[in-house]
Image 1 (cartoon, helix red, strand yellow):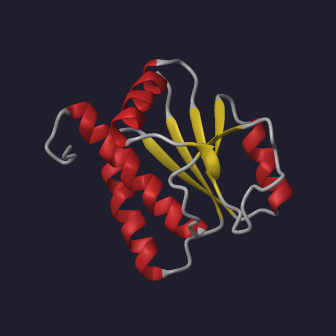
Image 2 (spheres, one colour; image 1 turned 90 degrees about the horizontal axis):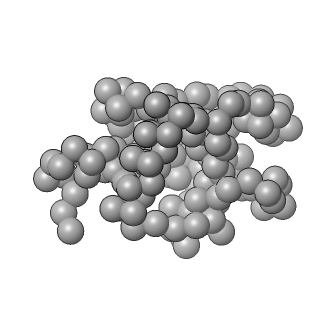
Amino acid sequence: MGRINIHLHGKLKDKAIASIAEMYQKRLLSAGVKTHIHNDSLEAYLAKLKAKKGRLILLDERGDSFESTQFAAKIKEWKIGSEDIHFAIGPAEGWDGKEPMLQRISLSSFTFTHEMAAIILFEQLYRAHEILKGTSYHKD
């Protein structure tokens, strides 16, 4: 079974955002979602990400977008598969011009700080797992 990993370039500095992230990280533990903080230079961060086994997906406003139910179906597909999924958020400057061949997913056509993108990704992963479990968390 594929595991889902979230990689952040740097610690979430805003205390309110970090608190929300921690809440979702706890909720996602039972779903096997792990978060990794990288404090390396951008080059070292990218090198570590590219060395991971599995599929690397960059969070980028120019990436593919999904509705929540479509994203849940994609999560199900990835979890059934054997390769791990690595979502990479940040650097703060974005991925513009970096690693053009890697898959990208957009959370919105809006631009977010990398800290807000982390919160939105955590929430959407939690929502996807709740959709897959059939709970009432997601309302159509």
